[in-house]
Image (tube, rainbow, N blue to C red; front, side):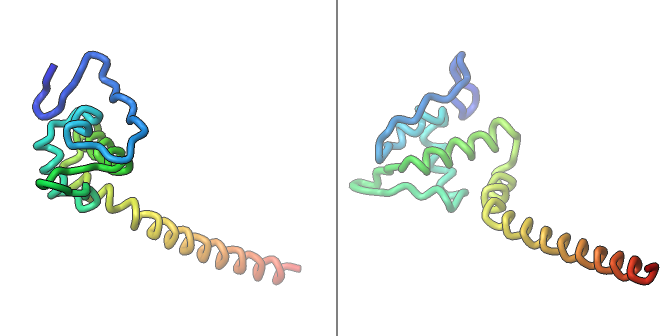
Length: 126
């Protein structure tokens, strides 16, 4: 069955990724159940997706890029993100850790201040 730009079979699960170094656009299309023209479009929209181009502009995807295509597919088709929303989500993974770390440091500073003020209160009562 074919639904829009997504190829779907009755099982619904994506096939296992074989242990290969490089995959052609046709192979990635089959592994991710996305049409080749959609993969080419995603290369323009997602800067992280950069397959190697060789003779005659043939694209060769590596294993990590196949996983990225599957993640993009999941965000767009299963979780309902827009292209820009999926792009932000993927880019946020890098900066999100830094933000969480800064928030944790702020929280620790607040906890420390609170503990010090409690210590001062308790010392005053003794």
